[in-house]
Length: 225
Image (cartoon, rainbow, N blue to C red; front, side, top):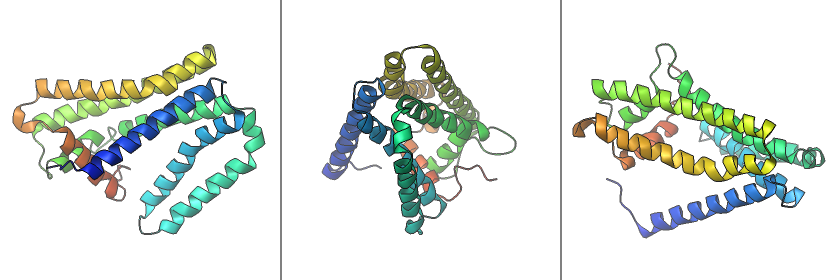
């Protein structure tokens, strides 16, 4: 059972505030209304964070590896800073579309061959290794749905970047992506309660716990079966 403490609430509030602030800054700068240096800094921060997290996932005990990777990514960005000043919009696009494409490939790859669908893996960890036949069918369908969601998001991002104004693209990429993601989670939660019997339903807290356990296991998200 997940216990809500003041420290947890403070942490969630802080992260939510940081996310909202970054989202608004990303919109303002990618739409061409902010300073160029600020735009590059806002667009580059998630790239450096992803490099650090991916290297940390290789071996959490080797913290120097993630620190070195983060420093290397920062140095590369600093080296290319002047070039990036003339391609800020492209940097934002690559960040947004690339992230969604990578997530789509992560979910979709788990559907190929004899591997276990990613959402099934989360459910198995959330239910202590026991998954019913109904859960197996449902979690596979949910994995397909998330694959499609990320693929459609990356496609829309590309189409708007190429054919719409920077402001329209930025509204979609920076202001609408998170609400759409929340709607996807909420819709899946409602469908889950309609199609699965009570014993097979996974609570939100258990889903989060299953995801955390999957992330902690080396290679668990790489489908290395």
